[in-house]
Image (tube, rainbow, N blue to C red; front, side, top):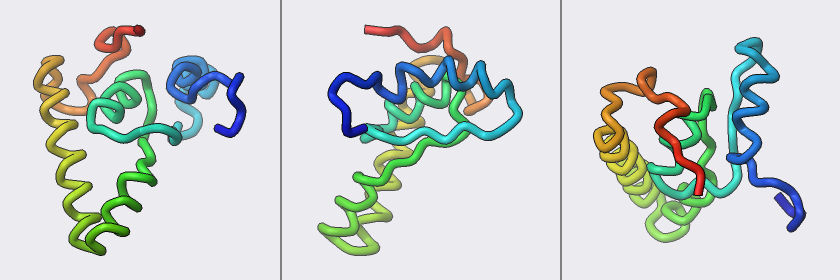
Length: 101
């Protein structure tokens, strides 16, 4: 995270998922701010996505109510993105749904 020449976590996620081959859960962190970011990571094989900063922004701005609102927004964005790619549930997300820029 602190190196400007290091690859992003999302760019190496498929390699990590392939390397662990289901033996351990794959949690990803670093730079996930929106529901669409979460959908991309889950589609590429992450078991879970950590979203520290949005959580802290909500906490800092409005306390517990802010955290709850951030989680609501992320959930709404995640659901909207899933509808847009035609995935009725998380298990229907696939790497083919993600296009690299």
